[in-house]
Image (cartoon, rainbow, N blue to C red; front, top):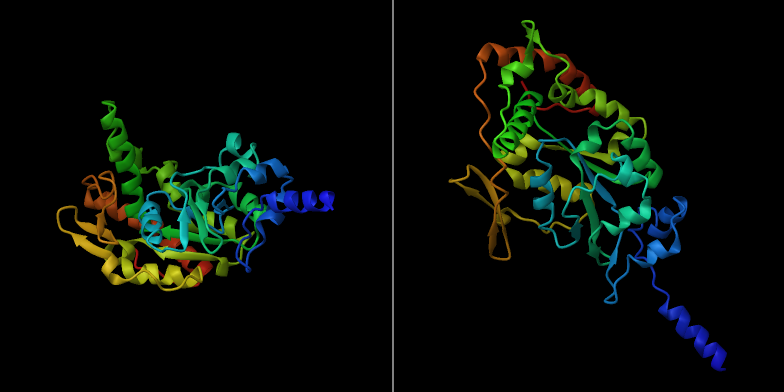
Length: 307
């Protein structure tokens, strides 16, 4: 009798990883697939019953597309638990070699009914990432936020420019990056990141387009609520975020968030003014992206209001 009681106590004391939602692969199944040790699983459970879960949704990009704004807005939903930092698990070899147990340890503690989300904008343009994500969970739901490719290039440059300025390091003008020998410099990395169709083709080799919801980053800036409603529906979340959660900050020039009476805006590094670019060069940029944009529209079966 004593032995039976002891066995029952040990069974109850065994910590369990909170399962994913019914539509997703179970958390334990995902970890077993990757060969993760049981010790790794045990580290993901807290005494109060909350647990670290592998993400059921990943914001995969794109860099300077509005990923931070999207994550902050999505975090308004009570059923969302978001990782605070960019994890870079699938694109950095050093992190990926640690295995899924390490990835799990980077996730926030959450309750069984919550959806865990992480965002790393570099995933979208990293060739190895789609297959690795699919290997972890082929039924995962992916969020991709995109802006006008030309505007995204300017934002990309602006971020690096200000990073250099803060360190008091000189940085070339954007014209020096965009133009080489009188022509558009197609080797400029920022241009490559805006060739959305190239990167999307890679993702569609592993995921059907219905598993990837594309958020219109330009519309999210102008009128965030309708875009967030679409995200809620895609993630099968109950409609909890409403128009009163957003207000336009005239000083900053963009929308900020209001959550339970508390106002918060994105970091001052967001929404910086882009550099002045010669109109002729800007037209070259628009022309360069015209055909790639058409290819992207055909891939995803929808159009965007881009130049």
